[in-house]
Image (cartoon, rainbow, N blue to C red; front, side, top):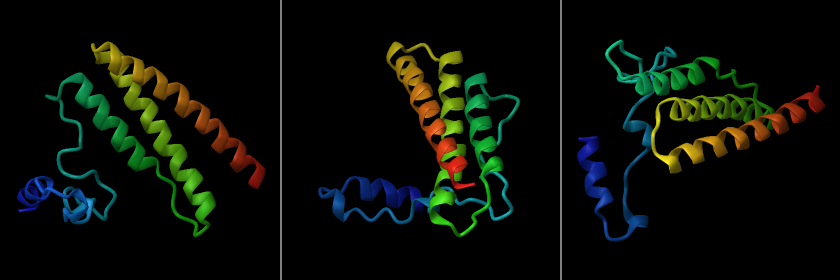
Length: 127
């Protein structure tokens, strides 16, 4: 039913009127920390798919707990998120063929590493 709602909402003439609901309704996250159905790597998955799924499961497994400090929580969560972006970009470089996608992957790796360095500096200054 959610899929049908999203398709119908996506056809709306005015995007601001489209009611697609909360994005989490499309793939709810289990409360036990497990990956949503379909996100766990399967032996039959192509190597790139295994890599992308691993980057997502690693990201979710490595997310730090919330402390209540909005700034520190943002920085710590983003550091893990950026690490996952680097892992996904590396999968593209290992398996992708399209020159534009590969170029973007290289840019993402550089940009995310620079942002992780900024985050690390910020976190170190807070100690």
